[in-house]
View 1 (cartoon, helix red, strand yellow):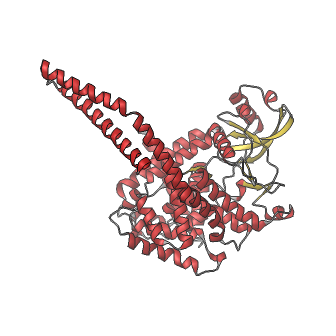
View 2: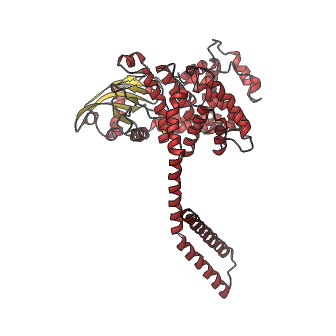
Length: 520
């Protein structure tokens, strides 16, 4: 009962703030479920009308409701399929800044997490230099074998996990209601949206996981000469504390400083977008929060990424999907783009490939008739979401995160080079991946793997034949001694026969295919 009252109170407060700030002002009551229409009309009676639009109103409201909702807003900025492209773009401006907690409290957290006094861990530990809803960062110095170095120490904000857990329960309640009463809520998989947010929060509140992400990302880009990832100090890292190499560089949010340091802004803009695509397609593991505040450039001209709390992963199927989609739009092969959607199972087979191809052409062709600087990936993705919804494509959270990150990366690149040609910049990375993974060389490698697999299956054939012989002998003995027709005996016999038949078929198929390959 008390839990229910708590849910009601918190959600009512959040709803009131959203309504007061005018978030629902432009929402047509006739387009919402009938049960919700009176609430929308009521909310619009006392909404502020400042004319700034729903996106700005939502930013103000989420900032006031609290840190968990700020994090929700930041996450929804990666989900234009849920909130729409315009609102998603507005939410990218949502700032996650809070007043820092005291140095003494941070010291206590560090000492408890690492099991040592602060002076045993760091030679100096300064005041916080940045603070957000999840953590704050301190500049410190630590002693290593090669001397003393400056480090960044990220400390978890006290009580933040309990607050997030409480607010996530509220969000799950709303998501369950939305999926139960709204077909659109089911299509958008609202519960899965909250699931993804919950996983993101878990990653961001356990710094061991963030450290692991940073370490994996660093290994992936170790041979890339133009990007650097801060080194993780595992000896000074725990659940509530993360120690990283201190970064000296110009933030991409400070273009004057970047230019003053002598960097080529146009080349840097292309590098930001190409790096993201390379990580996504080559490694299947990409930084999913690539705004200007998380990107720096050092004096060597290397791009430096920080804050690995939100990362994206793509499997082989998704990477191929991404490459072929982009390449199809670049080369205007809309039929192939449509086929990829169907092959991946993203669009139900009941729809026509030709009709879907026609819809994709309506998206792609206008992009090839405008100036290079006017091509917007954000616009492309917004239209793509609208079209795929018409063809019953269900939300793929990993692809949505990827696509939104691409929009953010494009935005960063465009601040560095407003005339950046998106197609020309993407083409070499996408084309290279396709040649390596879908070209003749890749097919030969796949064929080699198939031969090895067939050979492996063929090695099991003697055992398969032996098992079959044993099964026949058992059946023969049963015929001589009488048959046990109990349910257990029948089930055992059926299971033995199924396994024997399957292995026999697989073994003979392996030999047949191997023979066809070697002698055909």
